[in-house]
Amino acid sequence: MNFVQNNNLQTILNVSRNKKKDIITDFKQLQVFLKNYNQSPLIGKSIRVIGMRRSGNHAIINWLLAQVPKDTIFLNDLQSGLRQLRQGKNTTFFKNLRKILEQNSFQDTLIHSYEDIALSSLSNPYYNLMRLIYFGKAQQNIDILILRDPYNTIASRIKATQIESDYTVAPMKRWSAFQEQYNKYRDFYYKDYMMVENPDLTPVDLWLQYAREFIGETNFLKIKVCLNFNQWFSDASYRQELAEKIQINFTDSNLNKVASYGKGSSFDNNVYDGNAQKMNVLERWQNYRNDPQYLSIIKSKELEHYSRKIFDFTPLSF
Image (cartoon, rainbow, N blue to C red; front, top):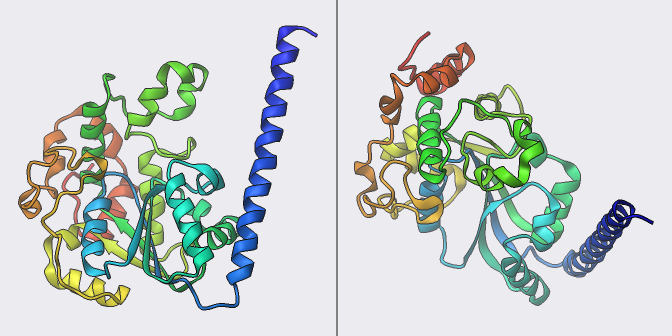
């Protein structure tokens, strides 16, 4: 047997071992879930926060955390696959959560966030069943879909990419273009905000998908609160209305805190921590208004249509 055959055999064995581990892990967690199934829910309110990166997700989550009880669990930047539930980067959290489930210890609120994820994957029935098994039952489940206008979203993503990477950002590069050189560009993938989790989608594709869900043209998320970031940032009465929809107390605390997650603002980092309302987050597009790459990305009648419909905002018309 030559080296290639040995290598292929080893790969098959490793995959088989991992699948076996996954089945055992799922089965153990299912046992815990079934043991507690007929008991009272262990979580009062489960809030799933969904948004594109650089859309103000962490600013909003910081604000949410200040409006909910202190007995709250926050789980950041989950993926839609089951691997992370079983043994992903938040392993410590899940171990603690399992202990909570096993001890039947009630938690007021669970906030878990998802970034740059296609909505279809979040509505997958099997994944949602497994999520229930791993998280436990909740008295109330709410999805919050965050949307920022496309012109400022793309501007912030370009800026973040330019800061994070040594590479010059090219418009709308698709993951598949680099698959053959994956190892060479792996760090670039993790830092490039001009890519999203699904290799078949661009940020513009994903933004349009979220926009259609936002106005009800699709219905992947059944029990949802649609959150307009532009309005959330600028309008206290809108924030109070949101708190009422989510059924949480409104204090407006943490509004001026710049989140440490995501390294703060793409343009200002954490300079405005404590004065976040002074950031010019609704005018980031101005930094790229004459940039050919930026203009090639946002040149879209569909973007213009949905931005006008949702935000009444189309600073650049084509």
